[in-house]
Amino acid sequence: MIAAKLARIGKFLRGLSVRQVRIVCGLILFSYLISHFLNHALGNISLEALAWGLHYHVLFWQFLPVAIVFYTALLVHGGLGIWALYERRQFRWKAIEPLQLLLGLSIPLLAAAHVIGIRLGHTLFGHDRFYPQVLHGYWATASQRMWLMLSVLIIAWIHGSIGLYFWLRMKTFFRRSAPFLLAAAVLVPTLALLGLYQGGRAVVKESADPQWRAANLSPDKVGTPAQADWLENITGHFMIGYLGLLGLVLVARGIRTLRERRGGMITLSYGNGRTVRVPKGLSVLEASLRHQVPHASVCGGRARCSTCRIRVIGDRTSLPEPSNRESFVLNRVGSASDPAIRLACQLRPEGDLSFFQIFTPQTVATGRGAPSHIGEERYLVSMFVDMRGSTRLAENRLPFDTVFIVNRFLGAVSKAVIECGGQPNQFLGDGQLALFGLATSRETACRQALKAAARISVHVEELNQFLKNDLREPIRFGIGIHAGEVIVGDIGYRDHIVFTALGDAVNVAARLQDMTKSLSCEVIFSDEVRATAGLSIDDLPRQDVEIRGRAGPMSVCIVANADSLATLADDKEPVAA
Image 1 (cartoon, rainbow, N blue to C red):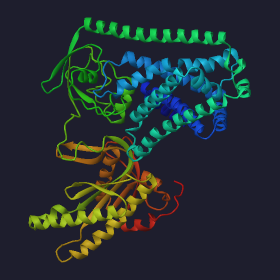
Image 2 (cartoon, one colour):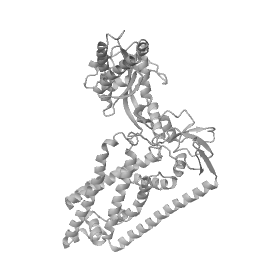
Image 3 (cartoon, rainbow, N blue to C red):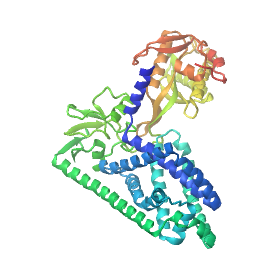
């Protein structure tokens, strides 16, 4: 048990990348930003509401464990941003990536005076600068800083929103939630800026009262001129140091470029006659982008997908070993055992390289624009249904009659799948692949698939009655059902693109369907489906079977007659597996 948990933890850590660490830190910082913006929005109510919100904001974010996590995330995220400036040799064609990096690097410069004035002023001199003091300083004393504060708020929000977009755009729920996220992305900063405006107006009005000024603008709250000069000097030194650091990074980039060019140029051959000359050190994907060679990459070179995969041609001994992140991605798509398959965004060859792209980017000329589904990982239930004896059926019939009967069979199957909430996906001769769970939970999808199997039996029996005078023997069928993580997306070429699922779970469902012939039954479904659907372990006979392509046996449920599943798959509370 402990060894298995340690193995899972080790696998998780090997799959981590710098990009993922940056995302986690960014999410922590964006959570702080949302909290701060919502606090600002209370200014639309009153100064008292601002003070009330600030109390709970500070209570949470200055709680010691939370503060440690926050400042660690701040330092790590900022450091990784500077590292990204050095490491990234080539950006995508779209300007959004360099824009995000530029905005992120500008935030410390713009926010330095505000952060040092408040946080360091409190630490060094005990200043208690809250909304009344800050808003008075920006609106009455130094109004030019008001625009600096507003700009840093907008820049930080845009930077975080772009990062969230890059992270969420490949998630399954993004398309449905995108309108709501966009509304929030516009509404939250708008309310926050309006709250600052209303709060500033209220503070300026209150500051006409001498008693208010005495209570809120005393030296113990806003500091003395000497203390302000001290904090200004610290801010100036920080900005000089930060700009110097950025300058060093740019110099280091230039030195690296010179060293790479002096180290020699290498030739990349794309397998289609196209060759490019690039310095050593560039990844294959960066080389493609630099020379404007179309190269598939859904995630933009972040090693979050495998669409940039290439197959290396010829000698591979001189290639660097895959990184932990590259090995993790290749293992997930089943390519880790083939050393010729590499990720173009991670492979940085030191010598000439010949390869061809596995997923060639192409313009879709279907009239409906680009494919509407990029590759994504989903938990789905796959059902394979196959018609038995179609070869014998065609022996003594005209082709039209055979096609008519097969189409009626596939129509009966499709009707049952749709009635139960599934989606007919592929028609393979006299068989069909159906998918469940595209818009439902795992439990519901498994129960829908089992109901569909029972409904198929009913519809095929009705078809047998309809064709009883034309058939020598009734139509029989076999069904295999399995659930698991699969890759779904638009697959095909030009006018022949279909939405489908790929992965081990689909293959297992097909092999379970094949087993129905040797086991003389109508349905075989995996124990994964049984447990997820909430069926009792004693409801159906179970058996361990060997599945071609899998290391160990799989426990499956065998159903002689599919119609018996109707009662088992009724909507009821799931029982323990």
